Image (cartoon, rainbow, N blue to C red; front, top):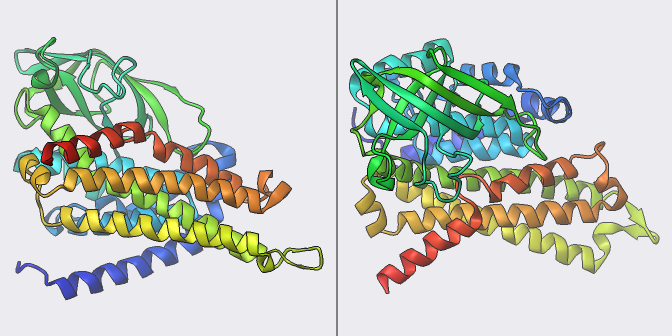
Length: 393
């Protein structure tokens, strides 16, 4: 297939955005408050997204996917998050779970696992974090030892998004304990694997409809053909995955913040105090202006990073050379910080009503918080940005 021109990509992404907006407004928004209140995984949304192709956005057409890129991924993340953060996170976690396979999987692996996604609507998850390996992700204690035709996995993963709902997990382990980054490998682990147990479902501040659990491995038997890439190559795959996914976290944050702004704009133009609409007070206008500027700046960073990533610079050295790792970290960090400020201001502008669950602002504020934490906390993002700047200095 000939490479798509820039004009064709822009038209495709415009049509995609309009399509996702329609689904978000007519289907997702109606369920957002219920999903949050119930704190249960929304299987109806999972099926809807599978039917719309959102769970196959980055799979090639040959595997039944949308043949989309990072920009398309960000568009879906943003527009669904505008309506419901939890539903957006389902798509994000699933797509991130498939990224190691996209970058380093064999054709046989892609055919086998992508078919489950495209035809069976299987969900995926990304399992890197452990109780003792959070920001210091290289300190993995989960081990994999080759015995015959299987690797035996032992250890525990935590904070796995889609943990109890997923059918496929990309699991990062150490195959050479003590060697930190040089000893890390990654496997595709199927839910039905003997020796794998799903831990308790975490109760969270926000993103309450998202399924977050531990994964417990006790001599879990994983076929050796499920090793993605080579032994010891997992760290590079993990870092490339995070570089690719961070702009989508930024896009999710943009969507949440834009939803908060639009709700507040409607509220302040109707709410009357001291004989005039709230929107007529200059202090309120300044707050609205600041909120809008932060979101527009965030959106610009997110899609600039996505555009560079869409040049298919998946080799880590090339990504660093053109500053994609820096820009990816900037997009995630800036957009999530902005979303937290914007949603907090939205609650403030609604006054007492902002604190009530009858209004969506408090849910948006709770959902926004975790975007500052997962995919690398924003303190880690700042360290990545500074390291990139100093390296070039």
